[in-house]
Structure formats: C-alpha cells, structure tokens
View (cartoon, rainbow, N blue to C red):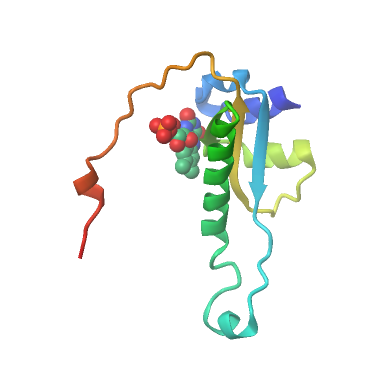
Length: 122
Ligand SMILES: Cc1cc2nc3c(=O)[nH]c(=O)nc-3n(C[C@H](O)[C@H](O)[C@H](O)COP(=O)(O)O)c2cc1C
C-alpha cells in the first residue's frame, strides 16, 4: 500500500524520492461543530484549514523528535488515494505527509528569506 500511495505523489514525474518513504500520514478535514454564537458569524469550516496545517506541522516536529524524516506533500492524485484507502471522494485532505528514515544526519543548507523581510514590528 505504501508504494501505491507513493506513486500517487509522483504524477508529472515530481517527488521521485517518494519511493523511499516508509509510511504516509494523511490528514483529513472533519466537519467542525462550532458554538451557535460563533456559527452565526463564520462558516462552520472557517478554522478547519488552519487546524489541518497546524496538525501537519506537529506531525513533522514529532517525526523529527523521533529521528524520522518527514515531508509535507502537496502534489498528489487525490482521487487515486481516496480509491486506494476507501476514503469518500468528497472528503477534503489537509495534507499527505511522507515519513521515512533519513539516509544521513546532514541537514542540507536552507534557503530562507531574511528575518526582516518576513517579520514586521508595529
Ligand atoms: C502545503 C505544502 C505542500 C508541499 N508539497 C511538497 C511536495 O509535493 N514535494 C516536496 O518535495 N516538498 C513539498 N513541500 C515542501 C516540504 O514539505 C518542506 O516544507 C520543504 O521541503 C521545506 O523543508 P525545510 O524546512 O526542511 O527546508 C510542501 C510544503 C507544504 C507546506
């Protein structure tokens, strides 16, 4: 199954490395039940996307703390994954996270925007 999920993330010849993943975590959006007061102002799924992103970040942090490698995958064949895992096709995905064992301990150089370019104090 893991190798079949990997193929779902390799469409358009992207993510060629995905075949080395040992497991996947797929985060699905559930229907939120908000309090009636909040529901008057917001669509019931208003917070859902943010919650899913936060969950994905914590999965990656926990993976790292257990010595695992992780990668959030945004490019994947959602319909095929639904078919493989018997997920209703109308279900919204938060993210697909690949997990595996890093081949070494080297942390590659990161390309990051400068702190002052992304943070503004007011
Ligand atoms: C929503 C989302 C989708 C992503 N999709 C992919 C992807 O399909 N393939 C990939 O190699 N990296 C993808 N990435 C990037 C990696 O998950 C990771 O964030 C990036 O490599 C930065 O890692 P670093 O913090 O170690 O530099 C995605 C990231 C996000 C947030």
